[in-house]
Length: 209
Image (cartoon, rainbow, N blue to C red; front, side, top):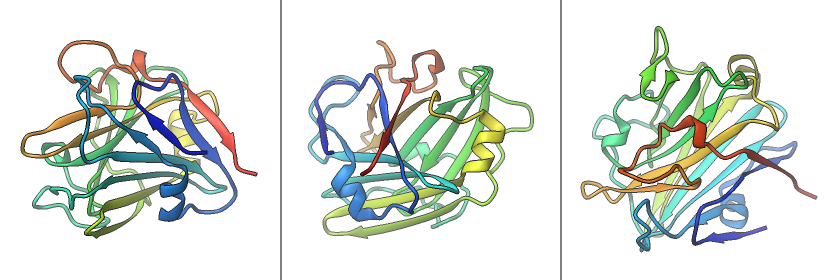
């Protein structure tokens, strides 16, 4: 299973398996995005993968041929606001009652941020708040950057009713400071805007043999 995408995806593949994914599996199974929000070809390709094991929801992201530009205060494994002002991978996840959605940001060096929203760009009460017990890791070398975030599955199930019927989307902001915007799902026309929960694609559950 290996995808090169020129257009948008109608569903977001999520692998369900019993073990923790590796960066090798990101290279093997990850989805490559070839065009940005405007339809222009991307020269340094981003890739993402969602993976569920018995205890965690994993988000893996990478970009080839670049070290990425991190927020200057971003530190591996640490919660850091405004990561989106620099290079970042993101996912958005709609709750089962469709009354709120989660935004999660992952920097190339493993820094992260999260917030719940009760409407497009409207933070939920008492948000943003860090998700408890998030774990991240990252690798950066001459071939590019790769980062992974692991979120407790029980927390997602309790807080957002996560299931195989969930709607979610993967996105990137890259090439900082001359940023380009990349979305796996088709969120509509106009200026780049990832906060369109009614346009999030459905999850496509995949089981590895």
